[in-house]
Image (cartoon, rainbow, N blue to C red; front, side, top):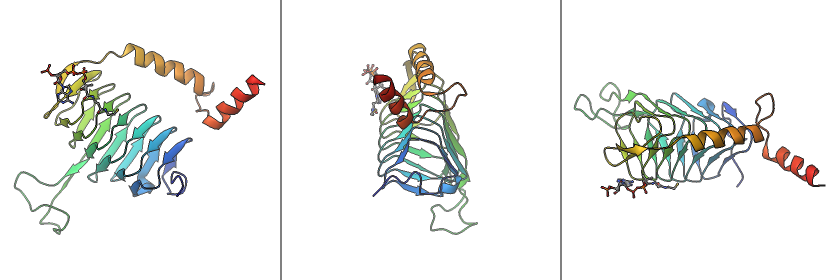
Length: 205
Ligand SMILES: CC(C)(COP(=O)(O)OP(=O)(O)OC[C@H]1O[C@@H](n2cnc3c(N)ncnc32)[C@H](O)[C@@H]1OP(=O)(O)O)[C@@H](O)C(=O)NCCC(=O)NCCS
């Protein structure tokens, strides 16, 4: 089976996007993908209220994004395998019955959001609860449970996730600038891989 990126009917899909054939995408019409995105096999991505994924983003195998709320993931962010993002929740606190088998109004799930900012990296099997912002450049250690907003450029670990130490940002910002100079044109448009390769080929001749 082939790459699904250009056949599923996403609301927007950039260039050099690969959605592997065994990724399960629900409501692609509310999902927008930037350039250079890879969604591995066995990802479950439910569009919810709205899903916006930037450029240079990887969702590794067995990541799931569910919950019916809004999901925003900025450029150069990634989620390692098994990461679980919840953009909404059943009522765990005793107000209502729970679970999708129960009809309304006996069940009242909350619809919220998760926002993963630029350069944030989420370690394997991490759980991110609804209503949270993962700050720019934050790194979350494997197996963490994120229950509170994460500050930018900080490494977090554990359950509940707690700040371990700062994550230096200078090199990452510098490398991003270098990469943008190389693979975006003067108008700020992404240059697809095939065009870069053909330019390289022409220069070598
Ligand atoms: C968070 C991380 C980057 C920290 O790496 P590090 O700086 O080498 O960390 P250290 O091994 O020095 O550990 C520092 C402390 O944090 C703890 N710690 C490290 N990672 C942890 C984790 N994921 N969960 C809980 N505690 C963790 C260590 O036990 C240690 O605690 P101590 O000081 O009480 O002994 C790394 O442990 C990690 O989880 N990386 C994610 C890897 C991953 O998911 N990769 C997927 C493919 S990209």
